[in-house]
Image 1: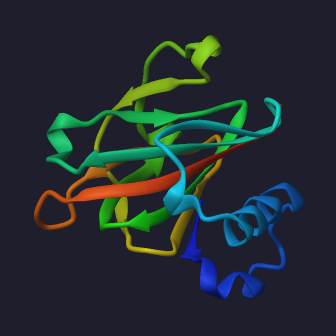
Image 2: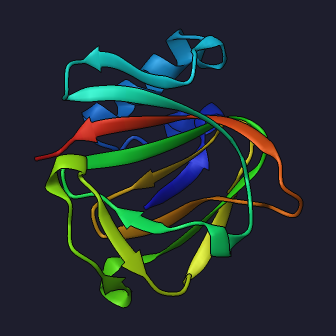
Length: 150
């Protein structure tokens, strides 16, 4: 996983071109104005999901990972904690190919708190639990770019 802020994106020269494409898209489009839901960029190769919700207790949330897509979380408004671990440290459940969803149970290894402009890139071995409150519950809006890797 890679954690950073979009205003410092020039420091991440090592990122894959498809990942850089997402950051270019985020700079060139007013994602805060996008409605909640999925927005196609390049078919199923690249799209962005706009999510809006109120963060909550970790116990109310679930662990996930993905095999076919990278997740690139870009915070638009509000703070959100995302708990992280590696899938090898988790009790993995049955993978759901149609949803590219690997559910898991386990404990966090660490967490990041995303504020406006922060991003977190989750690769296939990166378990993540989103929508966790960072202090108090908060309404958030974020973009989750989905980049096909398989």
